[in-house]
Length: 205
View 1 (cartoon, helix red, strand yellow):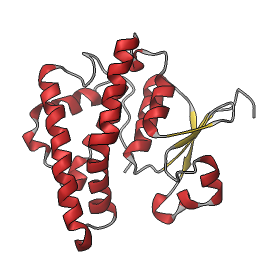
View 2 (view 1 turned 180 degrees about the horizontal axis):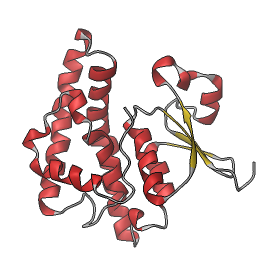
View 3 (view 1 turned 90 degrees about the horizontal axis):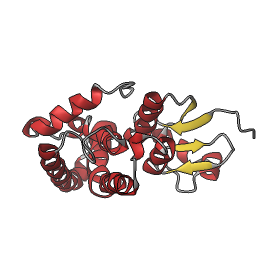
């Protein structure tokens, strides 16, 4: 594989984790080829996909040099490295990563999973207890965000960074999982500020 080929993204357009990459590419002017992967149809369990990511999850990127990289926030950091979106010094970069870890550990497992169960699986009765438990944890993550956004206009810094992209992806579609953002005025204002950023790209339906 040659160095001049485009970045390739293998993702499901309904996924917030995949949306993060489309958004950062739009905002940084990164060209890429999109390969649509339908997680509901088992596309991530095929031999070819597992050769790219043995964990069987989207997104995955094929870099111009032929190497593969998975895990949305790792890819997000890779794509933004060297720009202000990823931080200007070691403390800023660590602080941005802190919130990206928060997103993957304390936010995404609740908001994203509840959204998936409710919107894409039809909210089956057999999983109602799980949904309610995860929704409670999701509200705890939103409470943390609301407090931070009371003190700062953006999540990690006083300017927009990839920490905002990471947390925006599933927060802005939280209503799909039955989360009520009406009680979070600071989060709602922040969502609007993200939409006003140069190169903003909405999530695909």
